[in-house]
Length: 86
Image (cartoon, rainbow, N blue to C red; front, side):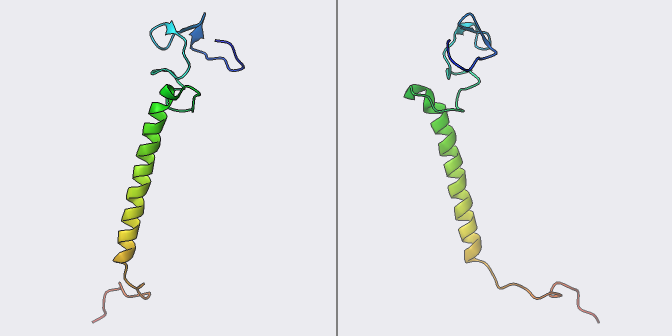
């Protein structure tokens, strides 16, 4: 593969990391897989899955925060949690 970036797993256009298959940056098993956006949209499936999971987690956190805010009580005064003196 020609270009300005050189993969340490590439030797003679073969990927030594992925069963000595022809080097195809972004293929499943490649160190770039799911980490970068490629011009070939087929290679972006893993990235889209990761982004969807991250968005779902953010939505869930937002819903949890909103429900906590709905049940929020007024702040307690200092000393409210101290045991009463007898």
